Length: 219
Image 1 (tube, rainbow, N blue to C red):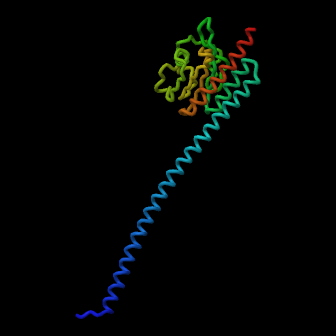
Image 2: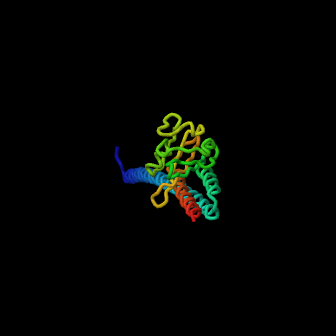
Image 3: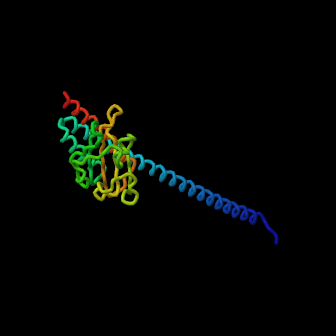
C-alpha cells in the first residue's frame, strides 16, 4: 500500500480530533471533580452556618428568658410573689412540668419549700434537712445537679418527691458565695447544656431578688 500526502493529512486530522476528544474528556472530568468539591464545600459551609444560626437563636432565647425574669423580679417586692414568678419562668424557659424553690433556714439547717408548681406540688411547705437528697448535695457542693434518668438511676434523688418526673435539675441560689436556697425542676424529657445554662442563670437572678427582700424585711 502506498500512502500519499492526502493520507498523511487525513491521519493528522484524525489524530488531532482524537487528541481534542481526549482533552475534552479530561477537562470534563476535571470540571466534574471541581463541581463535586465545590458542592461538598458549600454543603459543609451551609451546615456550619445553620449550626451557628441555631446557636445564635438559642443564645437569644436564653438572654430573653433571663432578661424577662430579671425585669419581672425588679418590679416585685414580696417574697411569695417572687417564688411564684421564678417557678413559672422556669417551667416555660426549659419546658419543665414541675418546679419548686426552697429557702435555707440557717437556725434549723433545713430547706423550707415554698408552694410548688406542677408535678412538684407535693413538695409545698415541706422541710428537708440540709445534706439529705439531691437538694442537700447541691447545697453542700454549690453545684448544679442534673439527672436525666432518676427513675432508673436515682442517685441521691428523693424519688418520692419527684412527682413521677424522669429528669431532675437542681441549682443552688448563691449570693456572695453563700447558698441561700435552691431551685428545682422536673420533666419527662432529658435536658442538655443549654437548659442547664438557662436554669443556672435564672437561679442566680432569683437569688439576688430573694436576698434583696430578706434584707428589706430585717430593717
